[in-house]
Amino acid sequence: SVSVWACFHVFRQPSTCDVQFTKIQEAKRTNVFYRPLDLLFVIYLILALTFCVFRGLVALDCSSKWCQDYTQQYEPYLKDPSAYPKVQMLVSMLYSGPYYIVTLYGLLVPGCRWMPDLTLVHSGALAQAQFTHIGASLHTRTPFSYRVPAASQPVFLLVNVLYTLVPQILCYRCCAQPAFFLRQINQEKKE
Image (tube, rainbow, N blue to C red; front, top):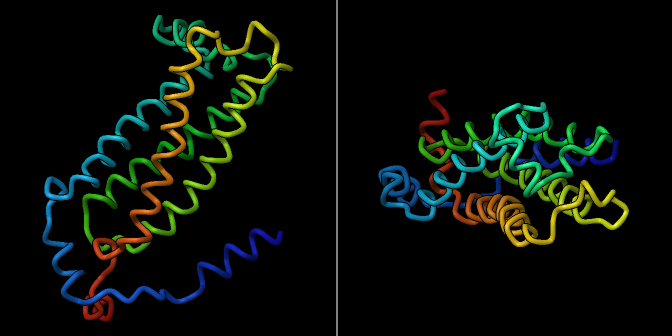
C-alpha cells in the first residue's frame, strides 16, 4: 500500500542525473573487456544465474546426484517439510533468473536507462530474501536435521553472503557511475 505508492512516486520522478555528453559517448565506446569491474559483474551474473537455477531444481526435488549431495552437505534446509524454503527458492529462480539475464544485457549494451532502477529494486529484494534464508537455515528452532551442518557452515555463509553482497555493489556501480546506461539527449528525441 504505502510501499507501492512510494515505488510509483519514485519511478515517476524525472532523472536528476547530470552527466556530460562526452562522458556518455566515452562510456559507450568502451568494450566490456576494458571495463574490468563490469566484466567481473558479468562473470558473477552468469554464476548467480547458475546457482539460482540449481537451487530451484533442488527445491523441485531434482533426482540428480549433485542436487542430493548439495542438500545433504550444504543446505538441508531446502528439504524442510514447511513450504517456505521451497517457495523461496522457486520465487528466486522465477524472478531472479530472468533478472540476471536482463542485467547481463544491460551491462553489455549501452543505453539501458532502466539498469540503475532495476538493480536497486532487485538488490533490496535479494538482501531481504537472503537474510531470511540464512537466518532460517542456521536458527536454533529449525529442526536439527534441516540445519546447515557445522562443517559446511563457512562455505554456506561465504556463498550466500557473496550472493547477497555483490548485487549491492552492482547497484552502487549503476547508480554512482550511470554514464554507460544513459542515452544521449538527441537519441532520446528521435524515439
